[in-house]
Image (cartoon, rainbow, N blue to C red):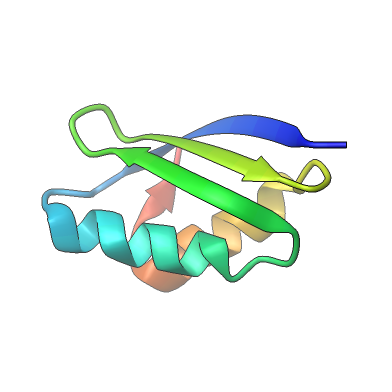
Length: 68
């Protein structure tokens, strides 16, 4: 089963921000793909199973940003 979830991250201002968020979320077990739209803060995560919001929140905060 593949799960696709949408999140919104605030505080990103450049490509480095996108790379940091992508890297941290990608390290969550089961994550297959992370797509980030800098302009809107939209983050789409494709994973083997649905992810808990807290796991994503922790990864985003580790990157230095905020899940909204």
